Image 1 (spheres, helix red, strand yellow):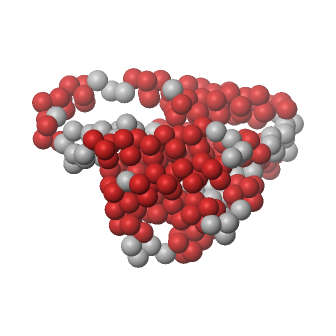
Image 2 (cartoon, helix red, strand yellow):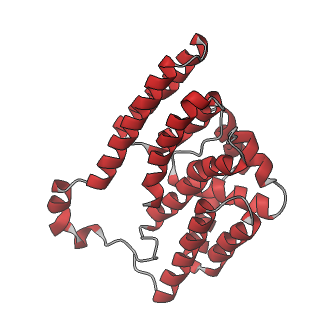
Length: 255
């Protein structure tokens, strides 16, 4: 679908506002949320999209599911797999914060806590909630972050074979780096003085991460980061290798 040029600019403003909140820190997050909501209201395309996904959406029910029934992350907050539900859920959260019905700092501390401080907790929140939200809007709109619609399938039939023959080398390298850093982290954990019961729990989480890497599923990896970080805590022997792993994960979004 092609949009008027004026809509492309408005959609770009929305993604710029999302990126500002994703890449920033908690400070002035209320202003950043207002920018996102204003960008939605100012764009006919975005307004119609959000109106559609919010139709019959049960916020409280989906919020509880994200908190308590997800098997992957041990009960921590994880957004749904369905793009439209992700969009609706995160929009409602942002709206609740903007209307001062939800305290963002408390929400982040409750579900994305890191013993390394609030900025790391906020980073966990960004990777687990804001990034999937932005990506879901990109998927549903079928456009790039500059608001330009992705070409329709029939327009690119000639290039399909060529694209399939040229895999995304950068992403393959990033997943390979992620696997290597996770191997190093596991090796350090096994040699550390962490008690055996906690080691077994950490091995379960890390093995699940290895499976997610094989699937190339960043959603599952991000969901598993929270319990992994919570269990590692401030263990200095392990923390250095965990931070290296986290840095490898961040590269998927900011390079």
